[in-house]
Image (cartoon, rainbow, N blue to C red; front, side):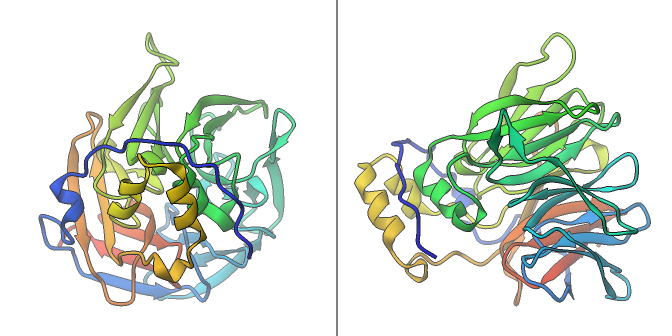
Length: 333
């Protein structure tokens, strides 16, 4: 596929911390069990109350995985590329489809309903991840108004800040909560619904916007200068936010960002095989103050590029944009 041209924006990234150079976490990674899902790229994972896992793969299928038996069942076909998956109050699956937009899927019949595919008359190019409030309000990310998922790396190289955090209320009305985000990605809500957190993949940070109270509408950086590149995020026990880190920061990209844009255009034109990614399994959890509470990282044979994470009943379930399996870790070990 021909690569689109990029218009790089000069940016001075924060100096990487020593943690960004380490390849293992401060504590041993719990044993990892892999469950083959029969499809490439189970990017996100939703764990239903009964413990079954729902994920979406590159060919457009939504799959239900039974983690104890390894049984995989087809749920639906979106006709696009399903990424983030959540549960709506009415029992339907909310799917962020990178190609088709925000969808609702009946898990029994497999019927697919488009909820949002345009904002202010303009198509959504890269619907990515979401969180659902108790009243059915959906907060979801549109990663870029320049590039779709086929060229997600272009957004990292360009750093043009066209990502958005959007909100769909129960009436179907859609508005922009935050604009100008650097590759808007994972979304999570505070347990009391007072704030939404969105990952800015291209800026290595988590941003929080207050939704209620005296600070409603005010946004701030919750955690800056992450040692890895953040992807999907999710709410966990005790109000923690789990963050999937597909890879460490790339010092080559950090070196190019503050320099003349022509250098990034040249790098973007290189074959991908000349820009190898570092293989790792990595996820962290942060609290409401932005303090890292858990930091789990190591190399796992046959698995890398963790893009989704979900905590359920003392376990972590991981998804990957690159692999053909979901991973399960027991936090109680």
